[in-house]
Amino acid sequence: DIDGVVLNIADAAAVGAAARAIEAGVRKHAPQADIEGYAVQPMVTRKQAQELILGMSRDPIFGPAILFGAGGVAVEVMDDTAIALPPLDDVLASDLIGQTRIGRLLAGFRDRKPTNRQAIIAALNGLSQMIVDFPCLVAVDINPLLADAEGVIALDARIEIEPGRVEEAGPNPALAIRPYPSGWDKAFAGGGTHYHIRPIKPADIALYPEFLARISPDDLRLRFLSPRKSFSDQMLKRFTQLDYDRNMAFVALETATGALAGISRLSCDPDRSVAEYALLVRTDLQGHGLGWELLRQIVAYAKADGIGWIEGIVLSENRTMLTMCREFGFSIAHLPDEPGLVEARLQLH
Picture (cartoon, helix red, strand yellow):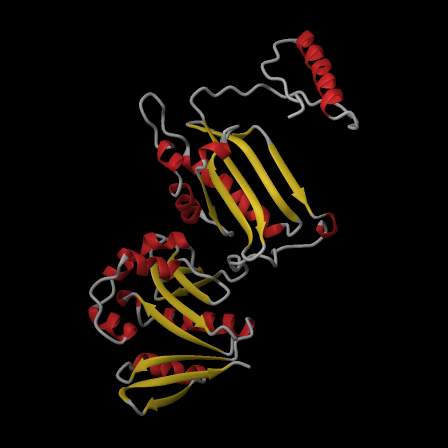
């Protein structure tokens, strides 16, 4: 806006001429400004690159929000942006890209090669992590972000901070969605198989089809209290895309293959007084302590998170689950109106 940028500078003489032109422009448009120096950078030319915008702003209701879309000087005219709440991961970042028209162009068309979509996802995840780690961030504007088959590069960026909060450590308390819980990974071995137990991630949705295919119909009935033959994509998304403030799930992955072996799950009331738990282990891996370890992990998390009670509804014929609950200290009570069901409850605080 004040003629402060000069492009395509070819040699040293052109650098001097550009500096003088910038100074003249500043004196004309912003005479009160002090010029402290000039930045000289390599000229980036990517003829097939798409111009994107990445940004962040504070919403008065939802807190920090991430913006993605078509960038460049015509960003307002194009009006092709989408917004998501951090934190993001690969799945959520890809969904955000897919909400825009330019997201479809990134796959390539005519003589344009497909862009490196994973590099764009990495940039969105990086911005998301900055928002989580630095509560002082007020606004971020990266425009344009050039994206092509080789990757991404930011040509211009602006960051606004709240000076009084520079020393404040994350995670950002203004986030509408609780960040991914760290420090809850653990290793477990049972029946000759090694497992990695960790909090669930949205990307784990890809593991569900094989996992469910290896669970017997009877085990599914015991878990869901009635026969289940199929699970919709929307239901699988609800299983894996959690608001960690109200819900939690731990997955056990086979260390050797990465296959999903079992899940323990927790869903708490808004006042955090009570949370409902659930547990499911692959049929071929039962009987070696994995279910016990997953239940132990979800109980430990609930206790650390300040939840008062955890409870679950169990079919009275599910003797394995009831035995496990009794050994964990759960109280078992039959439901008067449901003769085939019992309630297992454990007081934590």
